[in-house]
Amino acid sequence: MSTTKEWLLDDAAAQFYETHFVPALFGDWADRLVKAAAIQPGERVLDVACGTGIVARHAAEATGTADGITGVDLSPSMLNMAERARPDIDWREGNAMHLPVESESVDVVLSQAALMFIPDPVGAVREMYRVLYPDGRIAVQVWGDSAGYMRTADVLDEIAGKEIADIFRTPFSLRDAEEASEIIVEGGFTEFNLDTQKGAAVFPSLRDFFATEIDGWVLAGRVDVDALLAAAGDRLAEYVQADGSVHIPIEGHVFTVAK
Image (cartoon, rainbow, N blue to C red; front, side, top):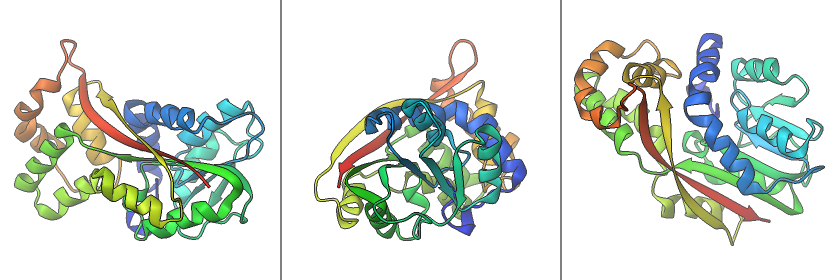
């Protein structure tokens, strides 16, 4: 999910991302995204802003082979982690706004939870359009609403300041489905299907939730996790299950579009 240098993760954070974020949240939505794209055996697939590669790995499972599966990300650390998991997939370092992929060379373009981090999201969608075969299609997911995440952001306003809280809110900057839809249209796709799905971010405990959300990306070292737990624990108590695990409801807007 690295799209500009501002969001690049180092090796330790990339490892943390794969170990914690993927099972808690991104694995489930990668499966949803690949199913929404209805990928068929033999199709060539591009995963844009692939991060540690969970979407590309699901795409390889859907096609039955890594042949024709490509993942692009700006972060060498994320790509190193992706290659360790699936060395048979074609991993390429590159910017979502200038994809290192030939025009009209892929059947399906996928992108999970990335448009919110791209300085020119319309330009990124135009790049997706460029690399598609004439009868190709894209499947793009961005986050919708999540009361639990927004409550956490409000607490960060109080204990860490607006700058930190606004960084935390960035993944939800396209939660307005109409605004997200405009980006798809301006990117060149005149007709699309939008499916707003409900899911949950699942963590072993409330502390694990806060630790993952802080230490798993660019906020690492900038927020005291224990202070956040003390300040926000009561506000998120309704999401704590009987076994102590935490389920934070979250929406995802999934766009499927034919060229």
